[in-house]
Image (cartoon, rainbow, N blue to C red):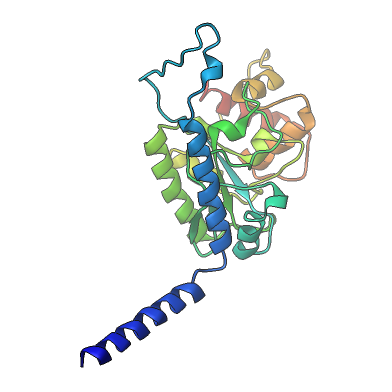
Length: 272
């Protein structure tokens, strides 16, 4: 009887191992690569940096430090045709692109990178005086081809993520921005259908009030206001279009009209 039980146990164990081997998922290899790379970075931090002690040659480690924390959230659309396609893109080394979170159309969230690590999502970008956005931000990609409305499940999941990030890292409302904000000459994401006002009403981003009674001062400087908000105004036409796409959901004109200036002035007063 004991012999029979032993055989049954061996069969069960063998079946379990086979099951685990066949159900590791399509990203088992890249998950292993992630863990390996994270371990390598951890080992670097453990090393005694003697080269930093130039005068005495003795390393003295301070007791006062912590991990760097993100201070911005940058929202993107994937510009691809499915969540699966995006996950594949972000797990191929040759693409050199990634994000911390990917939100699928059905609301499924893939947390692809620890918040304290640096994702490659912003590219060549600038916001205010910050020219290395990747080092201080969380990148969130929403499954959307770039032309369509955003699904309700995806936005619901996004709001939940933003709530957690804001509480965890004390991120200011004004620091929830879009990819187009930091790279107006290259990017238009998230597209014109993105509900920025809804996010701002929930505390993630800023918005403007009714402009019916707004009177713009004669000395109001449009480019200076855009620059003080954070935009890189070296290509003013690109910034005009980005601003109108985000705050007025207009995606056709780069001409800044008097009504656009009213919106900017109303928005600017939220800053100064």
